[in-house]
Figure (spheres, rainbow, N blue to C red):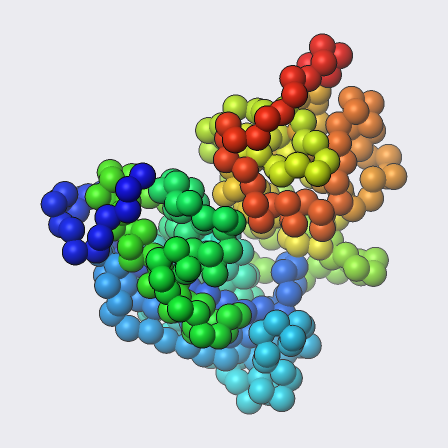
Length: 335
């Protein structure tokens, strides 16, 4: 697809496009269900992607700040920061009536929704747009799906990586030309529904070291039917090769990243999340491959590849587009 210059206005603006966007970035204490937001930034954009204003706040997580070497926010820095309930109203004002835009939007939305639920407030977000998904729709020639690669493609200079305000600025500047390219090319925006949490409870289970238990479907977040995967199943995962869009992935057991967040990431990368294991399953993700769960037993009986969560999330960063990876045909016994 040929990128359009922002100055080109030959094509009329799509009437179906949203009337405004909230480009969001949050820094957190970690990736799991019980982790907390420690800083948040929002750039409000109008219908055509022009910046209206921006906002940034620190948030006291009331716990250890996590990977300080990444985000640079120490306990001392966060000690005097407001609690999330104290900034929820202002954040709501900036999100209300807009599509939430983020790089790996499933993560940012999930963290925001949980904070609102803890504060007993409903998040005013109905739809989200992931810039990773949009870059795939536009077929941008990116070496990977990192924010820095998207920024470099559009000539946006990043000044402070992993600082919420600068990350949001960079994303806003990269989103505008992406939005214009989509509008000029008649591309349908990859909008996904957001279902805010209406209640929250902390898990009473004490997890084993290194893991946090994920809640079952319908526990802390409403279950929902996922859209059908638009890509054909290319077959089983092969070691030393990337994941490929359309692969059928199943999960079993506890995960350090919340299960539904992990599934959202897989779906937005173009994978098919399966609720069971069959001969068509491309791989099973589990942190306990020696367990006797029905999924692991079936996976071993079918010869289905099994990956640990850490390996899977690493591969999830660079999923190959459908049709770009040669996958040998499966033997008749594995069909």
